[in-house]
Every structure is written in C-alpha cells, then in structure tokens.
Image 1 (spheres, helix red, strand yellow):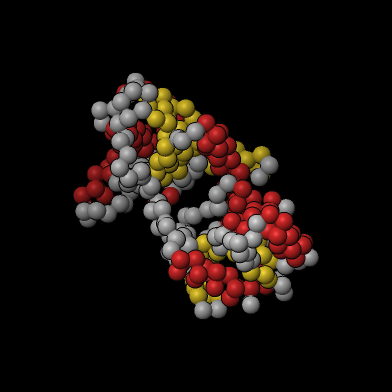
Image 2: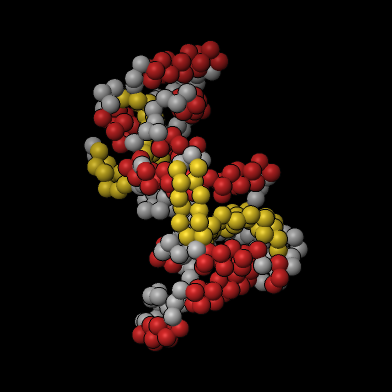
Amino acid sequence: MKRRLVGHDYTRRGIYLLTMAVEGRRPLFGRVYGSSDDARIELSELGCAVRDEWFNIPNYHPEVKPLDLQMMPDHLHGIIYISEPLAQGLSGVVRGFKTGCGRAYRRLVVPSSSVATQSRQAPSGSHPEHGLLFEPGYNDLLLRNSEEYQRWKHYLRDNPRRLLMKRERPELLRPFFNMILGTHTYNGIGNRELLKAPKRLAVRVSRRLVGKALEDEVNRYLEAARNGAILISPAISPGEKLVMRRAFDLQLPTIVVLHNGFTPLSKPKGEQFDACAHGRLLMLSAWEHLNERITLTAHDCQQMNLMALELAGE
C-alpha cells in the first residue's frame, strides 16, 4: 500500500512519516527478539548500514533533518523534517537514500558476480536478487498536528512488540480472506471465535434519540454486552458510534463491519491492535481494500446494517 497525498506539493516544508519495505519482504535488517513486554531489534550489518544512511541524509540534503527511525527486519519507518523547499521534492530524497542503501546491500549481501549474471538474465520488469534492496515506491504521511507526532513516535517504538505479538497470536492478528458467513464473503482481522457466541446483538440506534433517551439506549446495549452479548455494528449513526466506543473502552467484545477491506499485509491500528490481540475485537469487510478515502452512500450504509443483522442471526 503506497499511500501518497493526491495534489500535494512534495517540495514544500513539512514533517513526514515514511515507510519503505525490503523487496520480497526478506528479513535483511536484523531480528526482533525478547518478549511482548520487552521487545527489541538486533540489527544486521546491513541494518546498521541502512540506519547510518538514514541519519546521513543531511549530508546530501541539508534541508532535511531525520527526526526518528525504527528499523524492522523487513521494513523501516522514519520521520523526517523538510525545513526548506526542495528542488527535487521528497521523492528525490528517498531516491538518493535508496541508492546509498543499495550500494551497501550489494557490498554486504549480494556477490557482484551474481548481480551481473542475474541482471542479464532477468526479464524487463521482474525483481529477482538483482542488487535492488527496497521494493519500488514508499508510503508517506504528512504531519497534521503535534498530537499526531506523539502518536507516530509511539507507533515507531511499539513496532517490535507488535511483531512479536503477531508471531505469538497469528490467528488473532493476521488477516484472513474468503470467509463465507450467510450470504456474504468476508475478509477481516481479529477473533473469529466471537462469531460462535450464543448471543450476538446488532446495534441499531435511531438518529432521533437524544439526551436521556439516547443514554438509556446506550446503557441497554452495554448491559446486554456485560451479560455476554457480542455487539455487532458498522457504527454509522452517532448513537451507534457511542455504543461501540463505550463498549470498546469497557473492554467488552465487539464485531465491527467495515466498508474498506484488508490486504495480506494489513494489521490493526493503534488501540485496535491490543483489542484484537486479547480477543475482544473482530473487524469484517465484504469489500476489497482501497487506498483512496471512501465516502459511504446511503446504499452502503443500508448494506452494512443488513450485514450486522445477518451476522447477529436476527
């Protein structure tokens, strides 16, 4: 998933979170070890070289200041600050960084003779072991506010722990596909055992409810959840969002119906990660993943509510 901001001027000042993955997702940068309470990464020689290349970016682009970096076995996340307009834009910085890392890769990992031989044999457009370290493209996010910056830093630091948890609990934290439930085929992430609960309840809250009437309805659903019901909803209306948010905060199990689907490399975000890891959350979608922002139509909302009803057996 190579997200880019459509129409954004990447030569301008700004703070960006970048993600770059090793071609073929090979764990060339090192290994994560320890436990989910104390997860760490031990860098390989190549991982150390890539780390050094990242912090050497200002030697080639004085306008760019690396703020943070989290190396993972098969990818990296880095935060950079562009303090002055860039002639080549952000892509030029990334291209230069990848070039420097590629030199280290060919020196430390790929024998020069095999690079030359494989490059001659490789068909155009293919990607064998040909001296390219990173897969094409990268993902970027533009910083919006200071709170988001703190979330970014926490996300970077939390990556090793999340990886170990995915290894320990793959059935809860890895995407699944082609799961037939009723009249739909779903992809998703989370605890599929929630679908076997004897009592499942679709959350439907009228937009007309306000004040005490709304609070009473929210409490009715929460009481049912405390008594063992699994709440299911796309959380579209304000009242439905409130019910699902309260249930989530109370660590009650929930199933969320989403319009946007998942890819094989998708993972739960933020607080959803821990909820999935502890078996409290299941996210389901009958649609494929799209990088673009999705605007729900009235028909989409109706479909998702009908899915929630079907999943609840109502």
